[in-house]
Length: 113
Image (cartoon, rainbow, N blue to C red; front, side, top):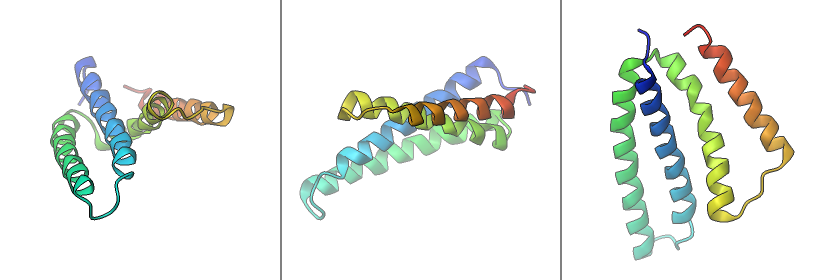
């Protein structure tokens, strides 16, 4: 099974959505446990995760599971970008080195495609 460019786009859209969910979780963690805001935020989280699960199931139909999962490392890159833009975090050289290693790993695993 050879994925098309469209399949890769959907794969990375799914990862982008998952990285947004990670940011949403950080935002939702600010609410006191058992407050109304807490329950509303976590209901939103459950809805987002449900939508992601459906999208992920549709995406992996077009990939070998090992290759699809090897691309999940890209979520770390998206999460780093979100943390900078939304929370004002800083990216240090070791973060960039780690991101480069992840990208090299993805290329090595998928190079025969």
